[in-house]
Image (cartoon, rainbow, N blue to C red):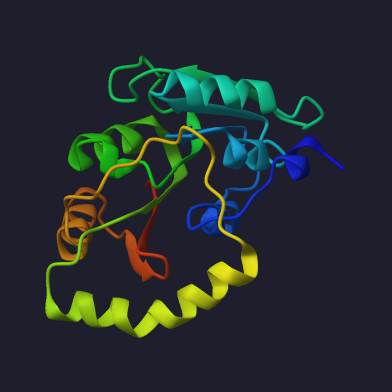
Length: 204
């Protein structure tokens, strides 16, 4: 059993790790995981990327990520305890920049702009985030999918890492979609189960 498998767990965020992995460029020399938490996605990325950097402003989460780092993974891993918007990451250095359930902890416009700047030309940006219900259509969608979510949660067994910071999203689904498309022309926005959306964009 690899260390990545040993420390794997399932919840509404890890469910979408496959979406990120499927979007990875091939080859992927360098990847950046923004809001990496205890590093499960970074460890999965490291099996296919030459170098993976995880950043999180929670020192507790970074401590867990470093302790669980898979030393046997082909790619190198680095974990940084820092404010993503302030840390001096090199611009245009990453083939993949991703963020799962973290961007609502930051200013959306500033975070998306910074992520796009860090990508190499031709690189891929993948964001999985949370949004707030505002319209009757938003609430109707949630009511329609809730029975399926309850069943799947029971089947998988939902687990959240200890100490994971939580915050309620402020932007609505429509606001996220509109701002993402303004900042990232041609971006693909999709709404998913588990109160999540995805934004996928390839830098020209």
